[in-house]
Length: 258
Image (cartoon, rainbow, N blue to C red; front, side):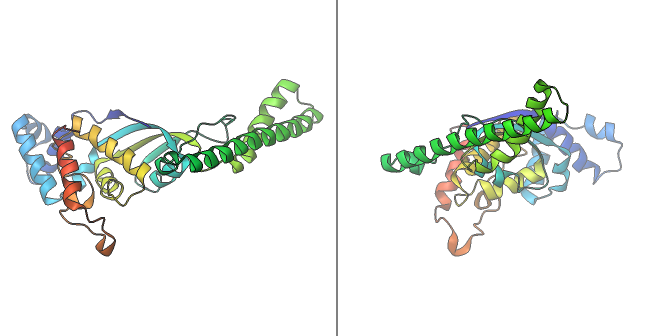
């Protein structure tokens, strides 16, 4: 798994502070910006985050590149609707010899790992066979329609991919670029940094939060799962029961100990 912060809104913390101060001031925007020292920005952001004034956070966005995750993970990621996504296409990209993700629980049991690898190998072989069969079929049809062989084969290959991909498993590795504004990130972290989140999306979320904290520590000073962001667990009887351990994990992250 590789998560990388590709870009974010410049002067993110100052921009949020400016937008927030504008709500409570009759001063012009330039005057507001000029009066925002580093100390004032930090103090103001700490106050905004602590009282949950999140609408002003929508002015700032962060863009991440994520690779080495499964399709099962990306399906969870794209459920967060207020965001933008660009994902490697299984329609236009041939998946012969595709990379795949193995869950740790399977990896640590030799018998389970052997069965998992066996099935993945069968799927890989079947995918390649099916893609080749479909490519030959479509190529012949396009040539019969008067298309030259090179063009026909190129077009046929793309058509073959879009049907052969139905065999691909959730384990298939994918790559995705995601952009979220800060308010959406807060929501994402509340749900996906939680101990009850699936292990893979939780690892992605934790790493995204860690990198956000590096560049905008005051914006994300209270970010994390609900027990960290809101001080209590919303899961009721389904709680992980490790609230103190979770709080310490994210406190260590904020201290850059982790």
